[in-house]
Length: 292
Picture 1 (cartoon, helix red, strand yellow):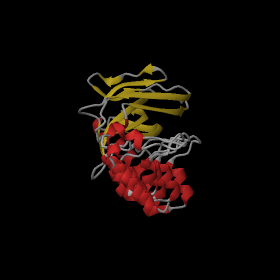
Picture 2 (cartoon, one colour; picture 1 turned 90 degrees about the vertical axis):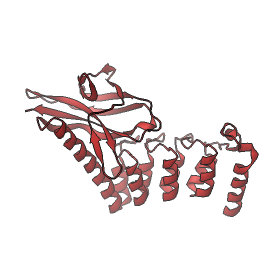
Picture 3 (cartoon, one colour; picture 1 turned 45 degrees about the horizontal axis):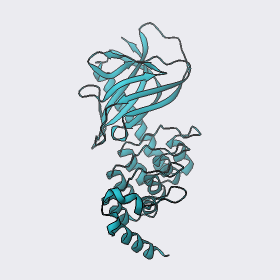
Picture 4 (cartoon, one colour; picture 1 turned 135 degrees about the vertical axis):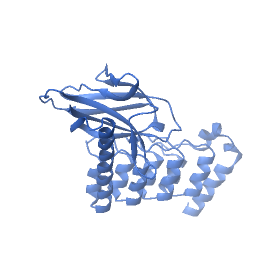
């Protein structure tokens, strides 16, 4: 079957009465043995008209193959910009990971797809997520030998760190000195679920008097420019580190927490509000700090 016949066949199936309601969609969108669905095939082929029909019929854009690959990952890897944009607008999870820990951003970086990388970053892709082999998106950007992609990722990481640190200084009116980050800044889209978790390594160091470690959970906006806040409405319900609840430093605010990592590997879990339609991104970081 050639490409034209393939498109006509898919359109006929999608437009038939068999898929007149989303509840019947599983019948007309079977998956092959690897879990590949019609939605994924359309995304992998850049078939936007077909994908648009599938989305209109209520297809699950975040369905996964057995190896964890999503439609967004297929489109990002194949460099189909309009397809990626359509999937993101339809609610695709930008930070979903395969069984090997790779994200759509990593796949785009690996192929040197600069426009895709830029769009994913605008939608809150986390540059510091680790793959199964402990590689970040920047590693894959360097692997592609594409200087533009490398610069996009580096500049985004630098911008987020700068916004976070400036927001902290403004909040504490420069009475708090930031000594060093405890782990790389993470970005979580609230619409992707109420749970955030990560692991990080920690080396104990002597702490001068008046110093300690604080965890910050910023609510950020990525529209025209990146902004972040540590006050106002908050989506954080609880912070747990190594199965121990961490306490907010202010009783009426859940943006900043006392933080007590142990030497070695630490497991961080944050319970958030359910907000599947939210546009807000959470920037999560911890710093060694000194009061002055």
